[in-house]
Every structure is written in C-alpha cells, then in structure tokens.
Image 1 (cartoon, rainbow, N blue to C red):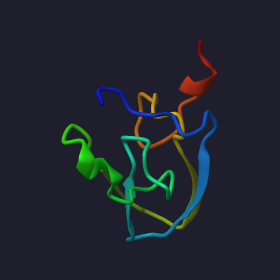
Image 2 (image 1 turned 180 degrees about the vertical axis):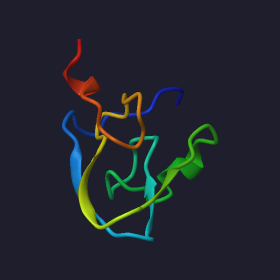
Image 3 (image 1 turned 90 degrees about the vertical axis):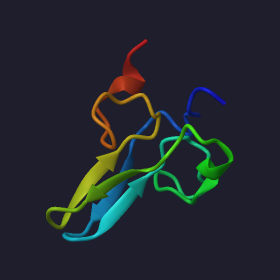
Image 4 (image 1 turned 60 degrees about the horizontal axis):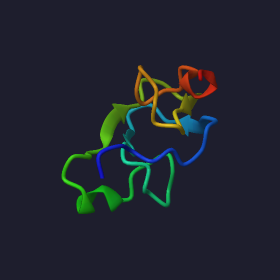
Length: 80
C-alpha cells in the first residue's frame, strides 16, 4: 500500500481537550476515524501523527487524508 485511503471527503469534528494527545490516522484504515487504532501496523510506511490539544475547543480533523496541514482539514477534499 503506497497511498493512504480516504475514509470520507468531509472533515471530522472533534472536541479537543487541553493537554490530551490525539493520534491522527494517516493510513485511512482505522475503524476509529479520524483517530488511529493501529491498523497501520500492517504497513510500515504509515505512522500516526501526534497532536497535543493546546486548549478545549472543537477542531476539524481531515477525513480525506489529502490535507497540506495535517491533521487538520484545509479543504483539499473539495479541490479536483
């Protein structure tokens, strides 16, 4: 597997907590999207991306895996 899978085009809204670490799935295989469930272990190329919450707030994590600003949605899913 060379490319990640796009589980959905739209972003996932996550209630982020200050001080909590989130592991964003980069392979697209996780059953707990957009967060990692270790499905990547079958493919050595993919590793989760760590994000540490800096405040309590809602954030939009990328669902298409094409973002240029991981782990956040940047609208790449709406570009051809």
